[in-house]
Length: 385
Image (cartoon, rainbow, N blue to C red; front, side, top):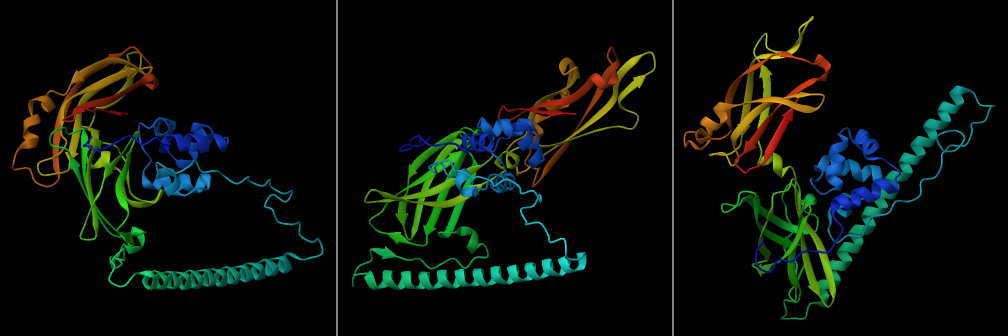
C-alpha cells in the first residue's frame, strides 16, 4: 500500500449481494441457478473471495432491480427493492377478458393496445431527452455566465469524442495502466489519469479503489486538466476506481473505470486431453482404472509470460477424497523455458503424464481426477474433471 492510503469503512460488493439475496428470499443455490453458475461461485462473491464478472454484475442488477454502479461503489448505501406486487388471478396482472369477445377480436385489441403503448413510450422518451438537453444547455450557460471575468475557478474540458465517450460518463478522458508489481507479483500496480468533464479549482481530490475485499483511498494530483495517482493492492478479479472531489464538506463521487477478469489476464489457460485409448474405464470383475497418457496444454499471455507454472501433479479422487497422485515432472524440470527470450506473444507448452492406476477398488462413478498446478505467483490452481 502506498503512502497516504487508508482503509474505507464501507459495505463491500459481496456484502451487498448477500443482503440483496436474503431480501429476495433466494438461497445461494437458487441465485446460482438463475445466473447459470455454481453455488460455490456465489459463496465466494459473498465472502469477498472473488468478484462477479461484468456480465454477472449486469444480471445481478436485473435480478435485484438495482444498478451495477450501486453494487460496485464502496461508499454507496445498500440498495433496496420495491415490494413486488402479487400476481392477479389471471396470472399476468391483466384484467379478465370479456367472455363476449371472440379470439380474433381479442387479438386485434391486444395489437392495438401494444401499438398505442409503444407510441406513448416513444413520445415520452423523446420528451424526456429534449427536456434533459434543454436543462443541460441552460446549466452550462448559467455556469459560463457565473464565471468572474479574469477568473478560472470553473474549467470545463472539451468532451471526449472517442467512440466510447458514452461509457466515460462524467469523465472526459481516462487512462488506467496496470501490471503485476515487479517487487511483489501478487500485487497489482495501478497508474491512473482521469479528466472530469467539470473541474473546480477549489476542490481537493482522491482516488477510491476497491478490489475484492480490499479498499483504499490515495491522493490525486491535478495537472494539465488531469487528476493522476498510483496505487498498489492485492490482485483481484475485479477492480473499481472512483474519483472523489471534496469541497465545503461535500463530495462528488465519479466512476473512473472498472477493470474485470484480471485473474484471467494474469492466469493460465489449461486444457486436458487423453491420447487415444487412454482415460477412465471399467473392467468387468476388475474394478475401475485410470491409465494411458494424459496431455496437459498450458498457455499464458505476455512476452515473456507474466505468470507460468512451476510445478504440478495429477490427483486421483475416490468419493471426493484424494486417493493418490503422480507428479508432472516436466513442469518442474522445464519451468525456466517460460522465461526464454525466444518466447513471444502467446506462449503455449505441452506436458505428458503416464497414468499408473490400472486397478482402483471403487465403482467408476465414484472415481474422479484432476490436475493441480502451482504458478509463479505461488497460487495453487485446481482443474478437476
